[in-house]
Length: 242
Image 1: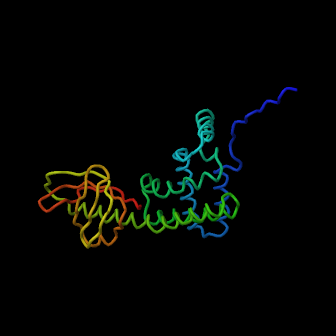
Image 2 (image 1 turned 90 degrees about the vertical axis):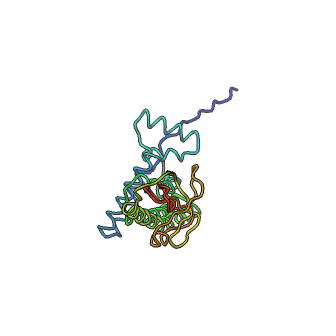
């Protein structure tokens, strides 16, 4: 007797897809939320879809998933959210909260806080619906709750540093450092920063209002100028919680 040949099935799109699950999530939330709050939920979920479609493939950890994505995206023009299922949402949520919302979205403090709140509710809902297990939900909820606290605080700090740099930039300086700096130490009116590239350790004097909003381990994108009074902030970019 001849042995039966095994047929390897090529992976297909998930049922339900991420897009379908997110749509159902919003329908469920609309039943309990006031219109203004629901509009913010819609805004966050729309941004999450955009993040997943543009960056979700970076989180794919199996060759079959990569092959499926490349085949359907390049040959069928299917987006990430129409290819994969809800389990791929949670793997991308940390990137959505801590990278996408800071680097890719001109978000207010209120929107950043809402992103964490909505992500937390989404994780709970996914567990309740059986799409993810309890352990995964707990981990994601912890990340989302932390983001709801820290993202608006980081945006507030970025605004304070920007406003200070705009009004107190020195007229003359002899050297520059352009880097991502980690906040190593915080003293009233003094920050001890370590450059992530080649800048080394630097001390920067700023108003106490700024140091009061700083947190050890946060990253700050700064252009510093060396003056006779030490390093001063010339330009500033984003602030990133650790």
